[in-house]
Image (tube, rainbow, N blue to C red; front, side):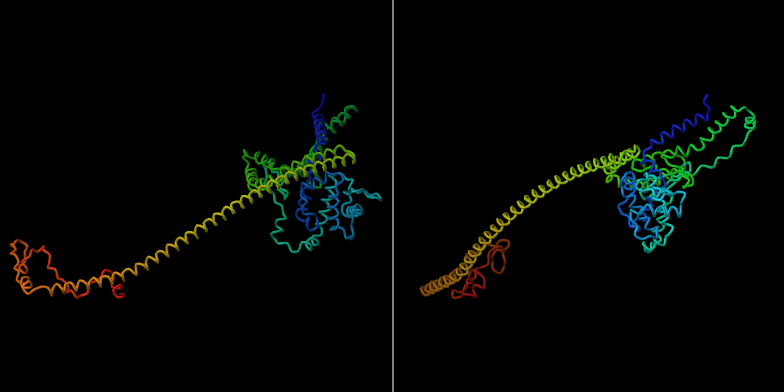
Length: 488
């Protein structure tokens, strides 16, 4: 019969086996030292002359590569701000880093005490990260050196260096969002287990037989093992590290989908802390990730695939020849992808160029057509002006002819009047006195009186007045304006 404690050991053993299968990349992401290292580089990397392009994803990728020089480049830059030795190089990096460990943390020294120190390049990825994080802590022991290189930072900038929790969940676990926009969760260390009191059964057990004592000792050992089990189980998914006060550090969300899933887990919560945490993630983190997702989606998928392959290679302890071959294949694949991308860009450029040429030709055609229309319009305008000019000449000629015609009419009128005067004079001379008397004594016929007649002239009111003939020798008014008369 298997006891309860024995079943616990069996379950823990199964978990330990499963923990060995946890990808190395996942274990790195759940290291508090890795998160601390990346945040320090983000804040002070420029001060120690590190590349500005280094980000969390690139650092974790380089840590997984067996032959990468980036971790040692970071370590050398940090060591120059810790050690007083001048002229540090990669060749003496191991020796002088070991000296720092021997002086400041000999119990954590991974370089050994042999005459020739262990090589940093041969360390596993987790050890490299711990060494780099330890160097950042030693750099912060001399803050004046950083201040000299940073100048005079503003109070606002110094305040931004402090990372405050973004919220808590129902289990009082603390959540952080660092400058890499990843969500981390910190669980406090469990309270210490109180010592087990000795019972009466235990005292009787000491008086039992040797076989009974052996079984009891085995059961006691089995009972003690599960107490250490949580530390062993949590190694792959976030370790309870003694250097971290026994607290558990986990990376719970990296991508946009991870954050959305985390927010969705708090949708139906009734806990006020989780409601606040959900609101903070939605307002401050989600918009940033949505903006970054489109630009990094393709790159992230490719990098994730590469990191998984590299972590498998490290776990399987493949030879450097296979690793180099795999890196060469990745480089060739990347070169092919870049070539395809370049071909697509060139085709798009050619298409755009042809489109531009077509648009330019169309524009030139429209300009030529417009120029022809302008020329035709100008020709029609000139022709119209010529016609107007000709009409103006004809009009002036007609007006000149009209000016000459009244003068001729005036002379003709004078001649006619002269002739008429002579005729009337001859008529008067030819008349006899009897004719004149007859003209004088002719009595008008009586006009019957009718209504409407006046007393003065005995004519009806509607009759015409008598005609007054002008003298023969008086000049009559000619047809035309007074101006013409003056001109004549």
